[in-house]
Amino acid sequence: MAKRIKDEFTRDWIIEQSIDVLSNYENGILTIRALHYQLVSRGMTNTLQHYKRVVAAMEVARWDGRVDFEAFSDRDRAMCGETKADATNLDDKQDEAKQQVRAWMRSYSKNRWENQPYYPEILIEKKALEGVFAKPCRKWDVAVGACKGYPSLTFLYELSERLREQQRNGKQAIILYFGDYDPSGEDIPRSIGENLEKFGVYGVEIRRIALMEQQVVEWGLPPAPAKETDSRTANWDGLGQVELDAVKPEKLIAMLDDALGEIFDNDLYDELIKQEDDEREQFQAELKRYVEEDL
Image (cartoon, rainbow, N blue to C red; front, side, top):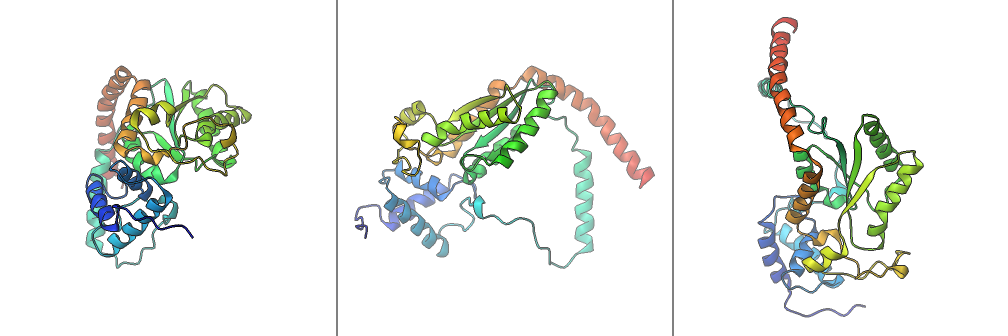
């Protein structure tokens, strides 16, 4: 039986500090593991026992109302779809439809990357961090997907088909990868590239954005022992496993913005916006004509 740790990092300390950390983020951005690392940066010991203490404290804090039940991201356990059982209100449906029509009138936009030389996709190692990447990826109009470790053959096949199509359109396909600093995290980009070539897709640029040893050292990220179950650990000379969750969300978003900014041609985008303004007038005129004459 593990010996119980007695120190100043009590449940009350954890809850108090957690409430302060969570006040800086929208609901659903942080995982509990990411919260753990933020508490480590505030002095808490980085051990499995302390992580379990954080999990237990957040369960108590949510039940007693000090922390919102929606505070944390838990995408591995999300529901799909919605069972609609509320009474239908005709007036509400009409208002909703009118709002949709108004939204459609203003909705025309060119595809942000259509005249860019690159076709980017964002791959992250952990599904739990999709909540961090989803909003900035929507802002950039780029796809983001979680590999959940080494990606499945189905995931890789679908990726290869998308990249193949964009290469046929003259694009330079590029993958921006965010993963843990550990033996697998270092190897996954190589494995992705190798499998893409097996599917006949060559020349894809794969940039590992995070995590790398220099970042771990520069940012003083807390390491944990590399997974003993990872067969690559024995031949790995790294500093020790560091999870991507240890990086604050705002830093991950800044890294994503910088990486996409490096490959995005703003002059080409300005040209696209000029076309968009001209075509929006045609779009709106055709919609008005359709509503007035064809419906």
